[in-house]
Amino acid sequence: WGGEGKRIPAVPMVNADLARIINSDEIQSVVNPAKRANRRWLRKKNAIRNTKALEKLNPYAAAARASETRAMEARATKKEEIIQKRRAANKAKKQYKAQGKAFFEKVSKQGDVCEDGFGL
Image: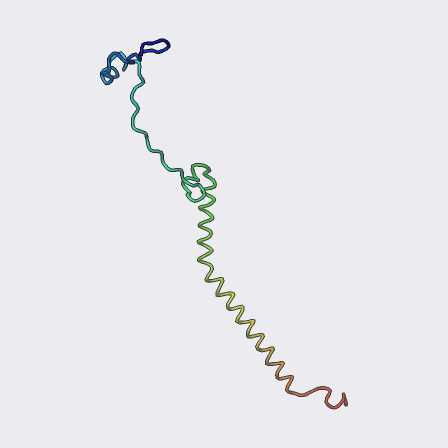
C-alpha cells in the first residue's frame, strides 16, 4: 500500500466509543434538544358533508343548511296532506268524466238525426 500514488488508509476515528462521545457534555450543549414523538394529525373533515367543519369555514352557510334541513322535514310532514288533496281532486275529475261518458251513451241511443233525411 505504500508505493507511489497510493496511500495507506487512515483510521477515521481515534476514539471509536461513539456513544460516549455523543452523550458528552461538549456535544450535548451544541446539539438541538431531542424531538418528542411526532404528533398525529387529525384527518381533515369534508365541509360539504360535515356541518361542524362547514361552520368553522362559514358560519352562515352552516345555519342556512340547517334551516333548509328543517324546511325539508316540514315539507315531508305536509306531503301526506297534499297527496290526499290531489287524490280527492283526481276522484272528482274521474266522476265528472264518467258523467260525461254516461251522457254521451244516453244521447247516442236516441237514434240518428239524419234517419229520415232532415224531414220536419
